[in-house]
Length: 349
Ligand SMILES: O=C(O)c1ccc[n+]([C@@H]2O[C@H](COP(=O)([O-])O)[C@@H](O)[C@H]2O)c1
Ligand SMILES: Cc1cc2nc[nH]c2cc1C
Image 1 (cartoon, rainbow, N blue to C red):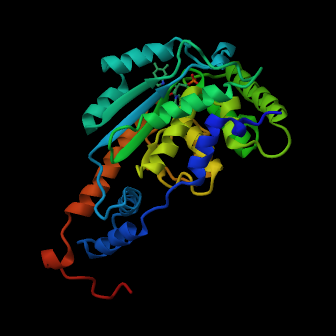
Image 2: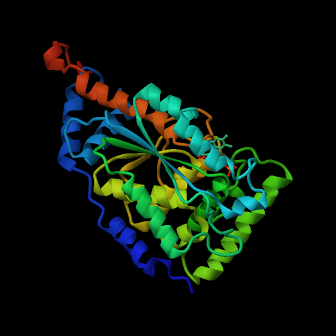
Image 3: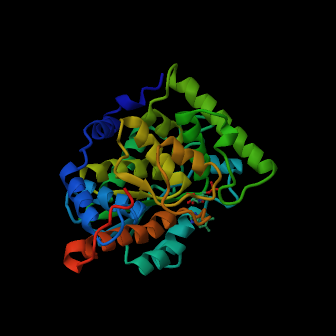
């Protein structure tokens, strides 16, 4: 039987989820008190107000910041790609990593446009994970090592972290993880990814069904433990994103999660302990059809919905603009007193 969580490396991450620090309620209260005095009808900045409070609560400061933002992109290769589940060949993963380094990818332009730091972390690209229809994707050591790489991506002082990924075949891994963690039909979690359609899409559904069946048998009766599911069905970049989410919580760094694949990493952490992803928001609703179901399953509501389905942190990076807007309004606006603006007349109550 497969007791993934018993591995020493993975145990460290199970403990990180169990000992996650709580939000700073005093900072959140201070944000709410200030917002009540800013020159606007109460609640009229909608989710910007919620985001300012969320940033402050996790940063542990009354005046939140979104100046030092890091986009971390983790890249991994997948044995299951050999089953024809992607519209692109597996070598595109390494080629896109080179493109990130050369500054030619979409995320490079978004990072430049919004003044974001970009870190690209390739994870053992020459050694794809195992085909998880046949055996578990990663050994316990491999999974723990990838999670550790994710945790270490946070070595600098930052206000906000965007997590993203690159990995041909990884929408199959993400679909398999959602299926294992949340149940339902495999077909409800599978979509085109980079553009798979017709019989190849049906074959992708069958790959996810076969993988979930094998993982369930290997993991034994009862609910599959989240770290077990990660090592059975995930990929190194998904494990790294899970590690980064857990490490960010301990550093009190709020996290913007990118699309469908990054949400699979958040889903693993969500299932590790109650409230374990309270410091995360989903930046953008992917056009990958199952993303909506996935974000609902982890109790989130994406900030943006622009029909993108790119990955590489792009949806999270765009959502930084919203976080910056929340900080700018919260910290820059005048109060009713300072601007000599009359408060509500009472007709509304
Ligand atoms: O995150 C998303 O919403 C998303 C949706 C579709 C595709 N992707 C990206 O496309 C790649 C995976 O697609 P595929 O078809 O190879 O499984 C991977 O590099 C992801 O970053 C990402
Ligand atoms: C070209 C290309 C760029 C990507 N960026 C993220 N996933 C991707 C997948 C492909 C195929």
